[in-house]
Length: 157
Image (cartoon, rainbow, N blue to C red):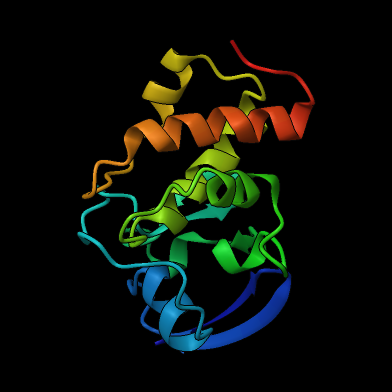
């Protein structure tokens, strides 16, 4: 066991856990933030996507010892009221079907738009590797474009 001082959604947490414990379980079981989902446990599906600094990562495979002093942001940390532009776009276009993967999809989209505020279809295809079991990819793509418009004020073609 080891002690880690983490900042999750701008709040400080001190946890005494095994250094190999995946960040996902620290977030869910110790910080009690359940928006980040467990999907596959092997970093394939993306349901567990959170931000470490500004980078989208799969929290199911990152050991808590690998966090260092970087800030962690979960879906709960994007906004208090669900009014982040990506969340608003998701709501306006009624993206989720079952909704299980959507927190990870949203977190991946926020990271994409930070890197590429005007993503092309190719940018979206390359960066959005999260799996949606309901196959709502068409709505996800439309929501990414709408979110880009909301963030930049420019309509994508």
